[in-house]
Length: 441
Ligand code: 2IT
Image 1 (cartoon, rainbow, N blue to C red):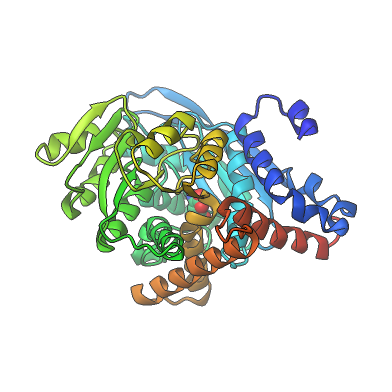
Image 2: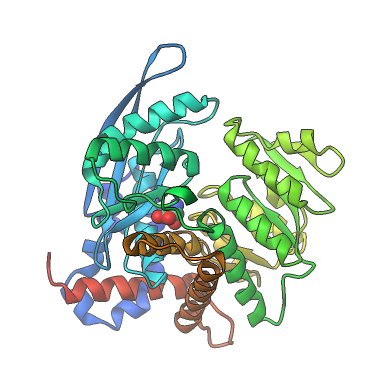
């Protein structure tokens, strides 16, 4: 860590992600001198390669705009590079390195053959027109297409990249490459190679994981109050499944504040989240404007200020800090399943773990998204499409299996589970073993 800190002093998110994993795996690592001999950790913390490129496009006013684009191909030990693209004003190489690093272990946990990657741009979709989004996606793909391929690197969505953007990206990829297969992006539309349930999969998988976490302590989701953060694709899927399982979602949030929904979000409100997303306004207040009888907007506050049983961060890294953790606990929250990547600050995780709040990390909880991308790749490669029931049952099995891996490697002497350690050790062991067996390359 000291070496990485002096080498990359400004890359705070990346250092945070690496530190978390190294702390978790220390005991297990020390039981494997062969890992030390092969310098597995030293190799694993550095991405295989990073592509950086300029993306120039013309906005609706005819003005030329320039952004930066990236693809971080982190690790291919267990399969081709796989991971999302993030379009957000705050995107930096550090952010994409942390996400690619996390993705490597997450993908290993899914049990599917996928390596880790992440990419994106500092382009902000906020306030952009649909035509601007399209032109940006096309300009971005003008560079990216040389770096990707169905057996090399298969991008998907992340924050700021959903079905609409994947459509524009895929259209341009085909135009440039003159390859008309369906295998280079996941999260595609259902009529052109997309898997049924991929849009729902991250949120659905998170709730299936939460069911197992609760089941282990003799609880169910029925009647539980849940605070969700964000209102994007992940939050949408989580809310939908929470409602189906009889829980009550009492908060959603955005960069502008939180909507308190004391009687629980309805199906109609849940679907309105899709319109809020595609409007590019990036404001959760719109929910309270549309449904004033059910939702109250509180500016500047987070979801963690609303009393609940279960917290589901579904927005952005470091969105839940130690103060938030204390507020949640004081208001009765006893379980936090992180759905965003690295949604909780390390101090918040320590507070949860030292104060009897069950905590499960994003790389386990949200792995249903990329796992269903893996299922989409399988369907594309075989030129078939599975039914919703088939995909859902595979997703169920994958989430149960991830939960079992966490229990196996994270069981404490008192019978409780350290899900953070369990997920990190299980993911690390797979990647490290794959690297060891394939030699020094
Ligand atoms: O963080 C993630 O796992 C994603 N954004 C999904 C990646 C994917 O390839 O489906």
